[in-house]
Picture 1 (cartoon, rainbow, N blue to C red):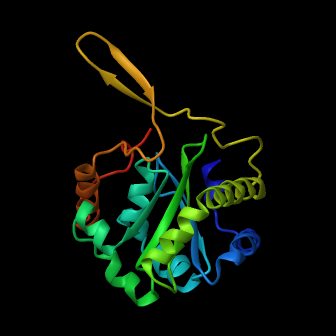
Picture 2 (tube, one colour):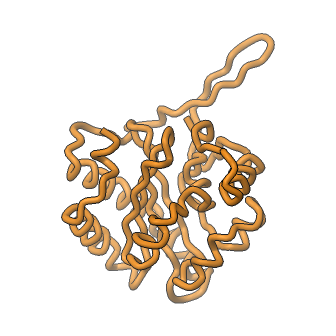
Length: 222
């Protein structure tokens, strides 16, 4: 199943890319990515973008998603978040990926995430190309629900193209966190914008990935 979902196929890429372009055409000339990663095995990764020369070649070939703080933060359980080099450095430490991304105008954006029933995380990232930061953030705030729907629709289309039958997107909040005390075990839903793994843990993962030390995403989110 995973091999089928994550295998690159040119005909699917064309359909998906055109579909996202069409849905985002009212938001001017924006750089976008649709990414999919399996939480249990991050080697299964797929990314699609209108900035092909960076994301679908250099980025994917060099497996930059393993140390990309945007991907790591998305896996951690955040529903959507703004990012740039300054905010990621403050929370996760020095991140070398921005040195390469700078040459492709990939320095600031907003990412929406969706956790599906197959233990995958789908992410739609909008990258600021023109205008200033306040203007970009106002556009996100005004259209947040529209962007979330675009991500859901794109993910459903991707799964359908790859022959995945049935609904794979959570109909409601089905993710939980377990707290154990001396007297009881408490289970409660994980809410939007709640980070499952503490940021110092994420920072340690980024550092280990950068130094090629063994560290996995496996236990970040469940």
